[in-house]
Image (cartoon, rainbow, N blue to C red):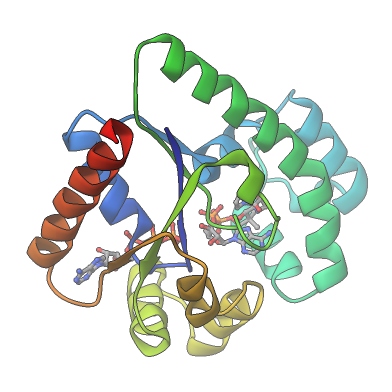
Length: 200
Ligand SMILES: CC(C)(COP(=O)(O)OP(=O)(O)OC[C@H]1O[C@@H](n2cnc3c(N)ncnc32)[C@H](O)[C@@H]1O)[C@@H](O)C(=O)NCCC(=O)NCCS
Ligand SMILES: Nc1ncnc2c1ncn2[C@@H]1O[C@H](COP(=O)(O)OP(=O)(O)OP(=O)(O)O)[C@@H](O)[C@H]1O
C-alpha cells in the first residue's frame, strides 16, 4: 500500500517519518528529492538559472536556497515558475523510488509530500495521513527551528493550504500537538490500522 504523508510546514512530518523509518518502513521524501534534482548539472538546475539568473547562485555554484526562498515566498507567480520546473522531476523520481521499494518487497511505502493537496497529487497514493498541529503551534515551531522572523514564517504559511483544511481531507490523522511519546503511540496505532486493512 502506498500512503501519502502530508501536513503543513513544521507540523511534524519529519518527526513522524523518523518514527516510521525506525520501524523499517520505507519513506520517500519529496523535499529531499526536490533538493537532489536541483543540484548543479541537473536539467532543473539549468532551467532555474535560466529563469532566475545567476544571482540566485552561491559562490560554489549551488543554488542559494535562502535567497530563492525569499523570492518565491514573496511572489506567487515566481513560486509557480519554480514549481513548474521542479515538480515534474520530483514526481518522476518519487514514482521510480516507490516502484523500487515495492520491488524490494515492501508492503507499506510512505511518500512524504508537503504539497500533496496543493499540487493535487492525491492520485499518487492510496490513503492520506495528515500530521497536524494547530496554526499557532506550527508558527512557533517554525520560527524556533528555522530562526525566522514572524512575518517570514507567515509568508511561508500563506503559500500553503491551511492545516485545518488538510485535516478534513485525511484518511488518518496524527495529532502532533502533544509530546513526542504521544505521537509515537499514534504512529503505532496507525501502522496497526493499516495492517488490519491490508489483511481484510
Ligand atoms: C524555495 C526553496 C528553494 C526553499 O528552500 P529551503 O531549503 O528554505 O526549504 P525546504 O526545501 O526545506 O522546504 C521547507 C518547506 O517549505 C515548504 N515549501 C517548499 N516549497 C514550497 C512551495 N513551492 N510552495 C509552498 N510551500 C513550499 C514545504 O512545506 C517544505 O517542506 C525550496 O523549498 C524549493 O526549491 N521549493 C520548490 C520545490 C518544492 O515545492 N518543494 C516542496 C515539496 S516537493
Ligand atoms: N511533539 C512535539 N513536541 C515538541 N516539538 C516538536 C514535536 N514534534 C516536532 N517538534 C519540533 O517542531 C519542529 C517541526 O517538526 P518537523 O521538522 O518534524 O516538521 P516538518 O513537518 O517535517 O517540517 P517541514 O515541513 O518544514 O519539513 C522541529 O523543530 C521539531 O523538533
